[in-house]
Image (cartoon, rainbow, N blue to C red; front, side):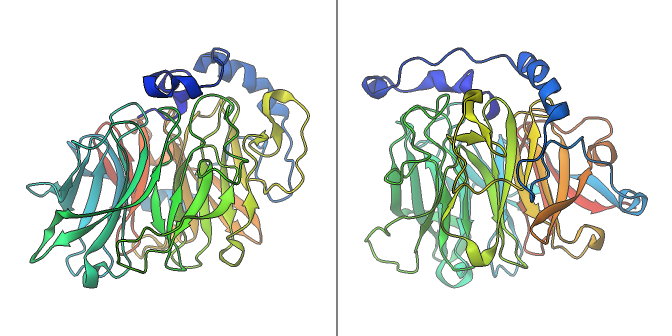
Length: 417
């Protein structure tokens, strides 16, 4: 699922029924090599445009010798079908892991092994384009009591659907398809930039990150349109269990394609990785006490205040990222989690992220309003370049961290023996 190459490939898969609403054809995109060449010189002289941003900096250094000697990346599972998300059910005494396969299935993993029939199979309902499919899963904070969970997928027409299900009565290893209740439907103008993630915030609401609807430059300006649900961070109050749909609240605007966001389980701060277009990938950190009201800038700027297409623009009122990296380092960011597990105290408080195109693996620490301690883990954790096409990170009930590859593998951050 190459989210990065969407502007060169994925955008050509839009449905015929939407052609009358399409913008004029965009200029052909540069190939990845050309992008890297053209941006390499610019990246070398880039300067940070905001005081809290680790931007325009050289590649981060490797971890300390002590940390490098303590941590390894161990294979946890193999043979999965394009895994794109991994999570757990709160309050589950068995601490099962649930892996989302892009093709439409949710599998239960026990000690790295997929268990029998899928927990849920919606493959007949989902579209299977490059950036489409079953993309997100979140369990209700009281799942152990009510059996509720939520999925985010693109349907056969390419539209976004957020649907609630419940576990089957008497069989927690199976979902009951008859309990499906649609909470949100968003029509997608193109086949890419669907977002797709789901996460519960510390306020108990379900957060739904949406992309700008696709194509280059956000041609319909969804990101800055406060009446559009595209290019936004939305929140749904799912505390009620009736048939009435919750009204989506727009919490933040100006996103291009948020590909994985997470709340720090210790502080409640929100970390958002937003996939860039031609020049920069970026990470935003939003403090828990100032979650709402941010405008992250797309499609006015890309990265830390770089005006789109090199034109002049106003940056007034925009919330800049805390970190950016140029496209000579990668081309499609994959956001992760702040590590809060017990097995590797050396990693406590570090936020990890990767890149789908180059499988870079990096971290930073959010401290005093800044991204500090930037670290490159790739040479230590993946010296043989075995890791590729990183689609997501996952977290288990204990806060231990996992990395997912579209090739079918899941890796676990573990103590080196």
